[in-house]
Length: 99
Image (tube, rainbow, N blue to C red; front, side, top):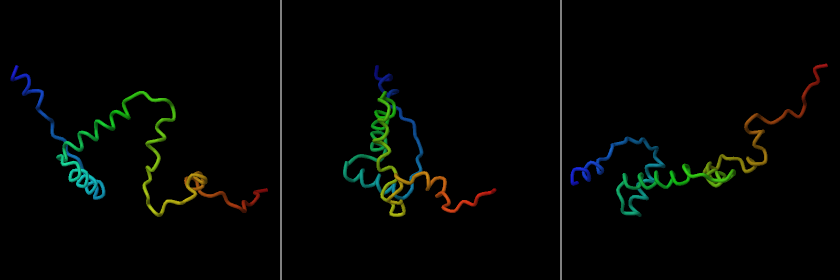
């Protein structure tokens, strides 16, 4: 029984590359929670799995999208209202008639 218990404790190493803001965020969470980086990442994975792997009603993913762009000052304030203009370009006011 002891050998069985030992085998279940074997963990697989995973390498993760983080950009500077994510690395700083990880360091802040580690310091505040008093947990190892690995434990913070494991708990984050489990929390995300709760949201991603469970059946939810249509439209429930909107919560995950809110704030997804962050607070970058270059994001236009009218992005929601004029999203097509930003994706496809603003329509020309003076479209010449080919005829």
